[in-house]
Length: 466
Image 1 (tube, rainbow, N blue to C red):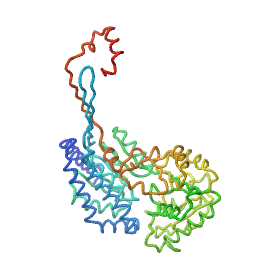
Image 2: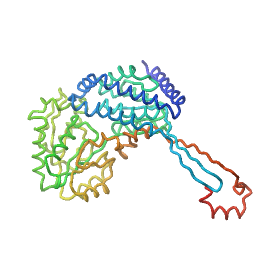
Image 3: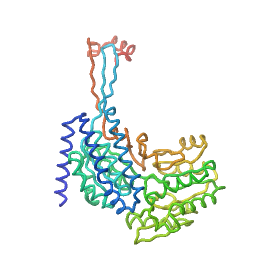
Image 4: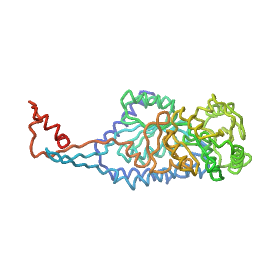
């Protein structure tokens, strides 16, 4: 299919989705619930196929794949179905003025046809999570999965038409050229998850049509541990969160900061925990993933030159394998010190005072999340006040993104806008105002010719008039 034919097809689907939105308006509750139910069936009926595809693309172990991809989506659907009726209720406000009774009704309106561009690292979850919000809000969605996760992309393209009509969800497979074709079109809303570099291009394309966007990008997420939190559970949490999906997670702890006087003890505990999790030879572990492709493996391998490998550092190109790696003595001016790692390499840096870490991260782009392990409430308050981020997570890593009560998103280089739970519904709607006023009599002073007496009365009674 040539580019012109593709564009014609995409435009036809877009108009089909817009027409559906026009017919339903702000209603269609039963149809939205039915669509969400079908989306749930799509996951449940094909659970084994999803797990197999995730293993094929990223070597994800079944438990990890189910927990981080399928379970999160099922929970999000259940939560949305439970609360959707309440979310769709209009907000009504009344105000009594001298000239009559004012009634303002705010109605959440769907945008229409939404373009969703999904990444490769969680190719199922990060593809369908925004779809849940888009459908719940009354939109149709055109979803382009990542070509770097071909097994999941192919399965989405094969299965979605069996459960949902194209006026609700349409899958587009293809490479970067297909993505360019899609982003050059005029959509009612664009949702992108990926790198800041690609996000800028998507943002610029959307700006040509004044299309609203949500950008879920990346970030160099610090993980700060103080003396009060030096224990086995802290170490296990950090290691699990960092090396889940072989470190290819936008909210993974990027760099760990530990007290200088406990530095060697931390290093020993980190290494010991890695061995407990993945064994002495992690390439044989059924619980450890792989790097998505050779280009990303080469980028990660370059980071190994920016410091000293304390543990790990093994690279097997043919197997897309980088062993769980701990690094020390990080060069201050190196990419490892300033760029998001997005892989199984964990720098561990000692600090003498909390202000050292704060000063460093105040000079970097705002991360998606700051992780903090402490039992000191004052430390929590200091970090929350002095470090900007999309979230602050205390004594846990990663799990905040599974809560429907926690809007997920960043700021600046880490993202624009947020979603999950109610935030997803709000993300894919805009508030439309219906204004009504019962006026038993007209204030003639509001019309020309104006008088000084009218101005005097306005100054005196303005709050009861406007």
